[in-house]
Image (tube, rainbow, N blue to C red; front, top):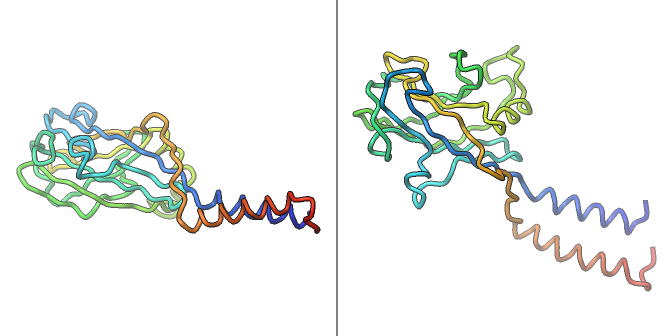
Amino acid sequence: MKPRNFIALSYCVTVFSAQAVVWEFTLSMDGLTAGTPSLGTGGDLHQNFPTQNVPITYDSDLHQLHIPIGWGTDNGFQNLENSLGGAVPLIQYRPISSILGLYTLTPLNDQGHGAGNVDTTITLQDDPRGPGSNYAIGEQEFDLTHGNWFVSVPTVPYGNGEIRGFLTPVPEPRTWAPLTASALLILAAGKRIIRRMSSPSFKT
């Protein structure tokens, strides 16, 4: 490879690696989805308090899911009819009949009277249910971004979740994260290098 081609390729790789794909999700939880008679509801906090909370997002570069959710009247929803009794919300995946959670959502802010919220970030890991579960990060990412993951909030009489809801990707879910300041400097320098390489006076 000629030096000028190698430099141009290195420059392009550096710039594009400074960007990450970020997915955004919505979440609405209720008793109907959970198969319970509960009138309680919950979901992502951004939908009720958009100026105070960011949306649910997944960063494919860091493999991190940021999930701010709530339920009950304190968070703009309807109160659960039962106490969590020390349980915590779970992320699960289809089939819904599966009762084992992939990830627990903590720390829990239990506000009492059927209300509560969680604002946390989880990092995906291979086989979150333990060795031999055969659920790699790539498979998890596929299921998450195709709407196959759901959140359940268990209570004392409903250990599998009094309310549930699917993490639903918003339309056009992928957005390019802004370039960092260092990447912008690289971009400007790269343009100068390419202009010099294109000059007739440039010699390899």
